[in-house]
Length: 145
Image (tube, rainbow, N blue to C red):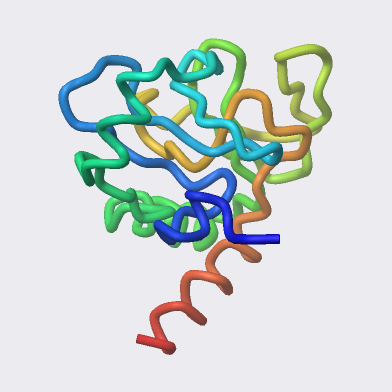
C-alpha cells in the first residue's frame, strides 16, 4: 500500500496546518486521514487543491509563548492543561475529570487568557495534556535539532 498524501507531505494525524486563503484555520488530519477544519468539518475540494499546490504551512506543535506558559505552569505547581467546550484553556494541579465538554477540577486551577492559544489541544481531547510529559517531548525535540 502506498503512502497517503499526508505522509508524503510530512503531515502527521492531529498536526495543525494553516491553509492559505481560506477560513476556519487551523486545519488538521484526523486519525482516519480526513482533512478537517477548525469546526471539525470535513474540508471541501478547494482546500485539497490549495494543499496540492503547496499553499499551506505546518504549525509547530507548540509556539514559543506556549512553551513558556507550560514551563511557568509546571514551575507554579500545575500538572495538566485542557481546553473546554468554549475553547478556553485551563491549567490544573490535579488531573481533572470530564463530563461532556466540561472539565471539572479536583483542586486549584486557572484560565489562560486567549482561547487562540494551544492549537494542539482540542476541546474534544478525551484526556487533559500532562504538562510534564509535553515538556519532556519538547526537550527531546529541541535536543534532536
